[in-house]
Length: 118
Image (tube, rainbow, N blue to C red):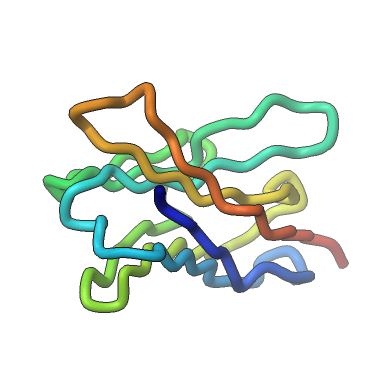
């Protein structure tokens, strides 16, 4: 089992920045694919960004150039730096971990609210 704990959400004005962090309960970041998803009210959960165990990354088109996913293996932490935030980025953001050899397995954090509003 892996526990994931997110932090860093909050209220920010359009154009502002936030940094989300997710800490895993054990050292998995060099082995697992890590990702951030988000879910807005009435919408399905969508992938925002993923960083694979090989360190390759991919992003949703809507956040390319604005968001950056990164890991700190020593701290068992994956972060999402969000710049130039827009009201449409408002959602609950969830951290996700999955082993690449068993992608049907997925661990989720509890979610952190991000609200972009003036």
